[in-house]
Amino acid sequence: MRKFLVVLDDSRECLNAMRFAAMRAAKTGGGVAILSVIPPDEFNHWIGVGDIMREEARERIVAHFEVFAKWMRDKQGVDPELIIREGEPVPQIIEQVREDAEIGVLVLGAGTDKKGPGPLVTQLSRSSGSLPIPITIVPGDLSKERLEAIT
Image 1 (cartoon, helix red, strand yellow):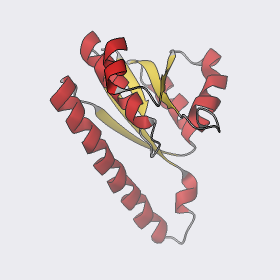
Image 2 (tube, helix red, strand yellow):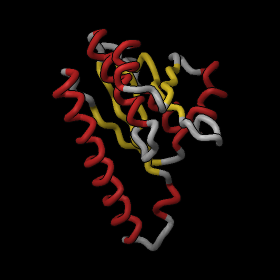
Image 3 (cartoon, helix red, strand yellow):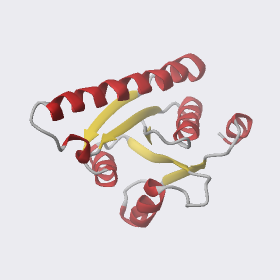
């Protein structure tokens, strides 16, 4: 089964990327893999404190994931899988793509502010020529109706 890989983070544009991936998966018989990367700098504390912070980060990710997963199951009939990795986001995303042969498309949300599309879109676009899959970049300001029309 072909899976759409979406990155779960705290950005606003993440929502449209999630919607797009779920809608495309539902219409094409695919799946959705949701990847969240915990940056290493969150745990540069004393031993024990870093472990507690790591566990709290995982709990936040799972809670955030469950909101999207419920919507995907209820509205799109898609049961997503959650993948949590630790490290720098871009190398971890690339590694996940290379490790999972079922991933067929990387879906990213593009920011709408004047700073540009966001660090993930910018950095991964530079690597797109060497990735084994295409990247779909979803504008962060697309309406739900427009997303439904194009998926």
